[in-house]
View 1 (cartoon, rainbow, N blue to C red):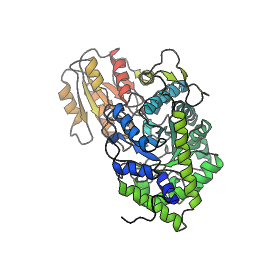
View 2: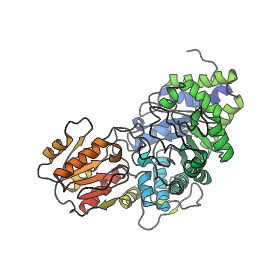
View 3: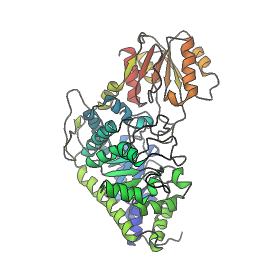
View 4: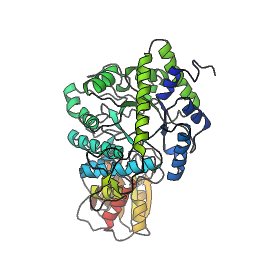
Amino acid sequence: MTTLASSTDTVTRDALAVLQPGFTGTTAPDWLLRRVGEGLTSVGLFGRNIVSPGQLAALTAQLRAECDDVLVAIDEEGGDVTRLEVRDGSSFPGNHALGSVDDPALTRAVAHELGRRLIECGVNLNWAPSADVNSNPDNPVIGVRSFGADPALVARHTAAYVEGIQAAGVAACTKHFPGHGDTAVDSHHALPRIDVGLETLHARELVPFKAAIAAGSKSVMSAHILLPALDPDRPATLSPQILTGLLRGELGYEGLIVTDAVEMQAIAATYGIERGSVLAIAAGADALCVGGGLEDDATVERLRDALVAAVRGGELAEERLADAAARVRALASWTRGARGAVPEPGAAVQEGTAPGTATGLPDGYDANIGLVAARRAVRVSGDGPRLDAPVHVAAFTPVANVAVGAETPWGVAAELTRLLPGTTGATYGIDSGDPVADALAAAGERRVVAVVRDAHRHPWMAAAVDALLARRPDTVVVEMGLPYSAPRGALYVETHGAARVCGLAAAEALTGA
């Protein structure tokens, strides 16, 4: 293929430096290693790239053999969104569980232990935390990924998370600026629009981002959302008013600005990934996340050449591209300096601790801090008896959003089977025919445990639970999403997330284990 510039050209190296591409496979392909040698400074990892901690460490070592300070990024929020444990479920509860406990020291400790595990595997940039204020109960993509609906609560936990993970040597990437919480559209599929005034944006959406900036967040991720009060024409990722005017100018942020994945339909379907990438860098973004579905050398070359052509055609200032590349390299340099020795399990950071150092956890906290946090997040109401015999677990399952993915297991069936041998389980979806009749037939004389996820957003799910309770009042209901429906059932359990440890904590609470 004829390209616009040689690999030794400064502009071309800068264009490569601002890309954060993914790839397929569990080892680094030759084309990726070659691009790292040519100037590619960042690589993005997803669940498809990870089998085990040892394999991941070997993969990142491959990349660092080409360039010692390469940024290895991952979308590891913990909770519902996990890449490290995509096949088993996360050892850490998500943001909503931490927000429900509302102990910033706990959040800081959880983030630090997560960061410790990432750095042990060679990952040094985490596209987390979500600082979105989930003010819209019908939000299809944020939900339990948010610490909550109160801006002050979200702000203090966002800051604690940033402090904790960066003390382990992993750069935080606070997202999705300027706030994806008040949407009813998933930007993976379309362009969401938030029609609120500047006063509301400053009092709600921006509060956690200000806290993250004050806490020293090394990077911030932009959102593919339209906010007419700030820019009536372009989504935040492509808006100079939002990225340069608001984030850089008004809020004084000096770190790296990363875009959400440019292949998401909110950008790709309207602008195309090449033009969208050029517009994002011109608007003030410094790095372009290229996520799932576009993980090949041809895509990297297309985006590189689009940026080079934009510079040579005068659409993108060479100085802007050079500044973006310099910010990427500066963060890579920080991660190399912060890496140092991997902290010991059970070490945690307290507020004000310098990056790369750690102090002891409060009494009773250890490397299983994720389970400790999940247990503290569980709420049980109702006066029914605890479970002491095998049950049938009926999981009413919604369609997973793209960020979470459908491959990660969730629920309480596995843990209840371990605690109550003879327990069975089945999943029922919106197209399952008569899920209530099927669940009762499978249960026989056993009690039913109905597991739901955001029942308030899925009328079919709520109707199934009500019908089940009408016929079997002793049914236990476990809500593993946002607990916005009225509590019902002989026992009602709120886990505030669907991570593996949330299921374990719920099973313990139901059985008294």
